[in-house]
Image 1 (cartoon, rainbow, N blue to C red):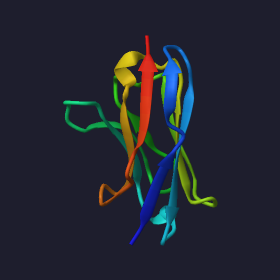
Image 2 (image 1 turned 60 degrees about the vertical axis):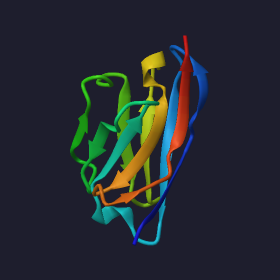
Image 3 (image 1 turned 90 degrees about the vertical axis):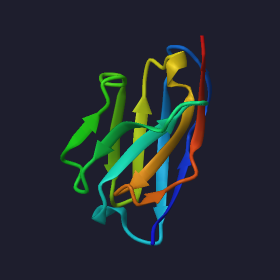
Length: 113
Protein backbone atom coordinates (compact mmCIF):
# COMPACT_ATOMS: atom_id res chain seq x y z
CA UNK A 1 0.00 0.00 0.00
CA UNK A 2 1.30 3.44 -0.94
CA UNK A 3 0.01 6.75 0.36
CA UNK A 4 0.66 9.80 -1.79
CA UNK A 5 0.45 13.45 -0.80
CA UNK A 6 0.74 16.30 -3.26
CA UNK A 7 1.90 19.79 -2.33
CA UNK A 8 3.12 22.97 -3.97
CA UNK A 9 -0.07 24.20 -5.59
CA UNK A 10 -1.20 27.78 -5.36
CA UNK A 11 -2.63 30.87 -7.01
CA UNK A 12 -0.32 32.50 -9.55
CA UNK A 13 -0.46 34.83 -12.51
CA UNK A 14 0.03 33.71 -16.08
CA UNK A 15 3.69 33.24 -16.91
CA UNK A 16 4.65 32.21 -13.39
CA UNK A 17 6.20 28.92 -12.30
CA UNK A 18 5.28 26.36 -9.68
CA UNK A 19 6.88 23.14 -8.56
CA UNK A 20 4.57 20.40 -7.38
CA UNK A 21 5.80 17.63 -5.13
CA UNK A 22 4.37 14.21 -4.47
CA UNK A 23 5.61 12.51 -1.33
CA UNK A 24 5.06 8.83 -0.70
CA UNK A 25 4.80 6.78 2.44
CA UNK A 26 4.20 3.12 3.06
CA UNK A 27 6.44 1.74 0.36
CA UNK A 28 9.31 2.94 -1.75
CA UNK A 29 8.31 4.67 -4.95
CA UNK A 30 11.19 3.08 -6.83
CA UNK A 31 8.91 0.12 -7.61
CA UNK A 32 6.42 2.28 -9.49
CA UNK A 33 6.06 4.27 -12.63
CA UNK A 34 4.66 7.63 -11.59
CA UNK A 35 2.40 10.10 -13.31
CA UNK A 36 0.72 13.44 -12.89
CA UNK A 37 -2.86 14.03 -13.94
CA UNK A 38 -5.08 17.06 -13.63
CA UNK A 39 -8.77 17.76 -13.55
CA UNK A 40 -10.31 21.12 -14.28
CA UNK A 41 -13.84 22.01 -13.13
CA UNK A 42 -16.42 20.33 -15.31
CA UNK A 43 -13.82 18.34 -17.23
CA UNK A 44 -12.52 14.81 -17.13
CA UNK A 45 -9.21 13.99 -15.53
CA UNK A 46 -6.41 14.21 -18.09
CA UNK A 47 -2.86 12.92 -18.31
CA UNK A 48 -0.08 15.45 -17.80
CA UNK A 49 3.21 13.58 -17.53
CA UNK A 50 4.72 10.24 -16.58
CA UNK A 51 8.10 8.90 -15.57
CA UNK A 52 9.42 5.35 -15.44
CA UNK A 53 10.35 3.67 -12.18
CA UNK A 54 14.04 4.28 -12.74
CA UNK A 55 13.51 7.80 -14.00
CA UNK A 56 15.11 7.18 -17.38
CA UNK A 57 11.99 7.62 -19.49
CA UNK A 58 9.50 10.48 -19.38
CA UNK A 59 6.44 11.40 -21.36
CA UNK A 60 4.55 14.69 -21.39
CA UNK A 61 1.19 15.63 -22.83
CA UNK A 62 1.36 17.84 -25.90
CA UNK A 63 -0.42 20.62 -24.03
CA UNK A 64 2.42 20.93 -21.50
CA UNK A 65 5.40 19.88 -23.60
CA UNK A 66 8.32 22.29 -23.23
CA UNK A 67 6.66 23.96 -20.23
CA UNK A 68 6.32 21.17 -17.66
CA UNK A 69 8.94 18.66 -16.57
CA UNK A 70 8.40 15.55 -14.48
CA UNK A 71 11.24 14.21 -12.36
CA UNK A 72 11.76 11.99 -9.38
CA UNK A 73 14.13 11.39 -6.49
CA UNK A 74 13.76 7.78 -5.39
CA UNK A 75 16.11 8.33 -2.47
CA UNK A 76 13.67 10.92 -1.10
CA UNK A 77 10.63 8.95 -2.22
CA UNK A 78 9.32 11.96 -4.08
CA UNK A 79 8.15 12.92 -7.54
CA UNK A 80 8.02 16.44 -8.90
CA UNK A 81 6.34 18.44 -11.61
CA UNK A 82 8.12 21.65 -12.57
CA UNK A 83 5.62 23.93 -14.27
CA UNK A 84 6.86 26.97 -16.13
CA UNK A 85 5.06 29.64 -18.15
CA UNK A 86 1.74 28.73 -16.59
CA UNK A 87 -1.43 29.57 -18.47
CA UNK A 88 -5.02 30.02 -17.28
CA UNK A 89 -5.83 26.76 -19.06
CA UNK A 90 -3.52 24.97 -16.62
CA UNK A 91 -5.93 25.71 -13.77
CA UNK A 92 -6.92 22.38 -12.25
CA UNK A 93 -6.47 20.03 -9.34
CA UNK A 94 -3.26 18.11 -9.92
CA UNK A 95 -2.93 14.52 -8.80
CA UNK A 96 0.01 12.15 -8.67
CA UNK A 97 -0.43 8.45 -9.19
CA UNK A 98 1.71 5.36 -8.71
CA UNK A 99 1.18 2.82 -11.51
CA UNK A 100 -2.27 4.41 -11.84
CA UNK A 101 -3.22 2.29 -8.81
CA UNK A 102 -2.55 4.63 -5.92
CA UNK A 103 -3.63 8.25 -6.00
CA UNK A 104 -3.10 11.32 -3.89
CA UNK A 105 -5.85 13.76 -2.96
CA UNK A 106 -4.58 16.47 -5.23
CA UNK A 107 -3.32 20.02 -4.98
CA UNK A 108 -5.07 23.02 -6.51
CA UNK A 109 -3.32 25.14 -9.12
CA UNK A 110 -5.04 28.35 -10.18
CA UNK A 111 -3.58 30.58 -12.87
CA UNK A 112 -5.03 34.03 -13.43
CA UNK A 113 -4.76 35.95 -16.68
